[in-house]
Length: 76
Length: 176
Image (tube, rainbow over all chains, first blue to last red; front, top):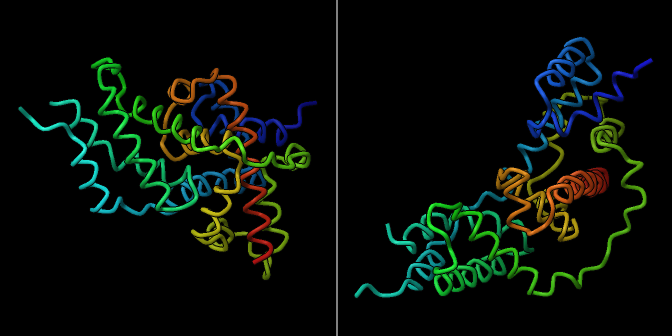
């Protein structure tokens, strides 16, 4: 018998990476619709990626921007 | 548009990646500056019409390797594979003071600083792929090209690197 929760865990990272086939996505979504245990964890992983992506999203300093612009070769 | 102008327009994105590859703001600024110095010197090696952002980031990651990143200790990773993908969630859930398992409430316990620290503690090889794919939003194929490694290596490092990151986050969140 297939352990769907285990299969779902294996599929989670590729699911979030968008690398599953259409059939696999449908399979995962079908399970997630009916399993709150997995659904909670999927939602957590999705939010976690967002948190990691926005962590220290400080802009570049204007001083560095000027330094980079000064590296250009002068126009003749 | 001149090559240099085109490259400069991408500098915010290049900085964003650099900021997460190295430990401090100062190091990130140095790395970006060196990247642009080298890029402007070797612009003839760039093929117009190809992915300039990937080309710049390839220079950046190579320079980062030159900075002695290989000297970093090899992490103790024996427990990573056993931890599973839900390791962080499970640890946070177990330690929730009020048994609150609402996703956002659980995530709120991770500060921005702890995320950055946890990422900095991920060994370079793994951190590079996480930064490029999860933060830079590059495809596996682009990340493979930038780092000059096979696509399968990108995938396996990503898999392992994410687990290391989650384990680091769990250690920080539970210790907090």
